[in-house]
Image (tube, rainbow, N blue to C red; front, side, top):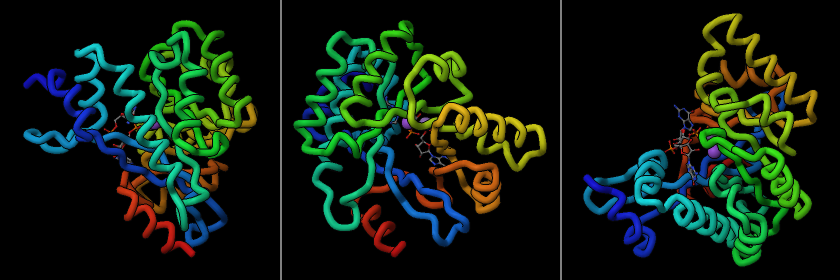
Length: 257
Ligand code: G
Ligand code: G
Ligand code: NA
Ligand code: MN
């Protein structure tokens, strides 16, 4: 099947949908943990192939040379949705994924900030999640651009930490606010002392650099408790919720108070 051929039409016809996965602030005990933000995650509701996840979507986009327009389409959609939130959702932060390719375009900063302005969302509610899955070839340039976003009020996260190309080099070079511990690391932590040493080491490095930590893929109370004990600040994962639509998100947040 050639998904790439369908992709232009998909963007035009609104087949690309955004789901939001809660990001939960950890407190002394699970009962008082609170949703403080969300990560926007794309889905493609393909008329014949059903719902396709972001990896399939971006693989198809790359084959079609549509990586940039797709990324922009998703960011813009997510930011406009979040910009319109009221009630229980009004104060939530929204994190959008930014790829190495996005960062490399010459007009990245102006373009991204203009998108935020058009979306009508306050820049200080927005986080740019820079994924490690693409290689940043010019780190000093990426650093300047990310700092421009921070100067405009945004926060910056390094995504999937522990799996990418050059995690420690990124940490040294990039101006960051959050470090996201990859799901593969989180899912090891109940497995024994060695994995736990890795997690506590990552959290210590983040703390030393003044970064907030977000653990991805938290599925059990035991994992949540261990991460909280190690000093992790936030988590994402099925323990609280997977990626959900906006009505479901509102119910989750309202259910907390
Ligand atoms: O949701 P799913 O399991 O399909 O996500 C697979 C991967 O795709 C994840 O690593 C996620 O961070 C990434 N991803 C999800 N949405 C986006 C997006 O809008 N842009 C980019 N670049 N990556 C995304
Ligand atoms: O690579 P990234 O971590 O950005 O992937 C996001 C994807 O991970 C989403 O598609 C989401 O469905 C999935 N995901 C989110 N939370 C969990 C979790 O707790 N466990 C597992 N296995 N997958 C999760
Ligand atoms: Na992400
Ligand atoms: Mn991730």
